[in-house]
Amino acid sequence: MRVPKIAIEEHINVPELADDSAKYYPPDTWKKLRPALMDVEGQLLSDMDKCGIEMSVISLASPGIQAIPEPQRAIDVARQANDFLAEQVEKHPDRFQGFAALPLQDPDAAAEELTRCVKELGFKGAMVNGFSQIDREDSIIYYDLPQYWPFWGVVESLNVPVYLHPRYLIEERSDIQGHPWLLGSVWSFGVETATHALRLMTSGLFDMYPKLTVILGHLGETLPNAIWRIDHRISAIPRGIPAKKKMAEYLLNNFYMTTSGNFCTQTLINTILVMGADRVLFSADYPFEQMSEAAEWFDRVDTISETDWVKIARSNAEKLLNLGTSSR
Ligand code: ZN
Image (cartoon, rainbow, N blue to C red; front, side, top):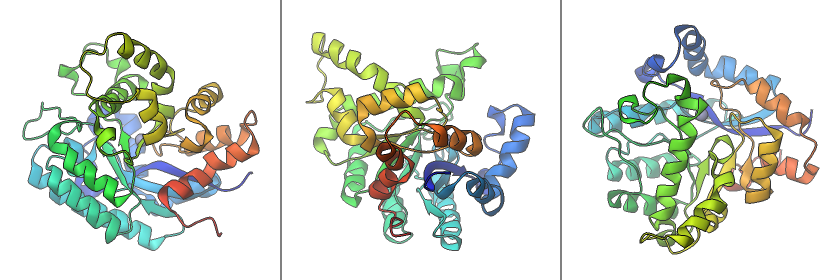
């Protein structure tokens, strides 16, 4: 086994939301996921031990707070969930750190909760599960909209990253209605999250907040492959785009990517070629992926230099999240 790894897209759940995701999975699959999400000190820790993962940055499972249309309930549940997360971290501070869940139904409350989580609970950033539903079940609100810019200003001033994580689409409003086999992690997660990231980039958000940092999972949700062509076609037909720079510049300066759920060496190498090894981080995506599959794959990757391997395995995460683990 090589040096111990750090994983940063590892999920847990709280009793209040424990059954909210049941509808997205076949009953047999959910029967295994539900207890795995709740068994933080049992299954998660034991999987980490077996897989050479020293530390997991834990977060609330998707869609979490983002799928609570009532703003006040979103605020209340986010606070409870973050307090629960903080308790797990407090019990095992050398094994767990936390990403905050945020009630983005109310941008001011989200900024306030993030500030509390970072300053009082010691969280390392936030995990945001795609768009929020606000007031209505069928609403889809993305965070490039003007009402979110002050929130992003607070994120930048706190100097912590936001992990933009996928969530299930509202199927009736999607272009894959009638094709359930393309839902979720198969295809729609990646496309929708990439679109959300591009909305942030094209809006000019990173011109206003140049130090803002966003993390994408799944080796960048297709963006490393697509970014050249996106810039190529924007330069041909700009259509009044507000952003001042090329999208590749934002991708390389404002984004990090993790290996969560994408254990493919060719895709890893392509992501390193586009992003550089300093912006790629190991992750598994517990319990939606087998931690053992992630670790066995990554431990065997030998087509990158050992220096790059160690960066991806842990030192990039230590630096980005200020984990204070390097002395161990
Ligand atoms: Zn995940």
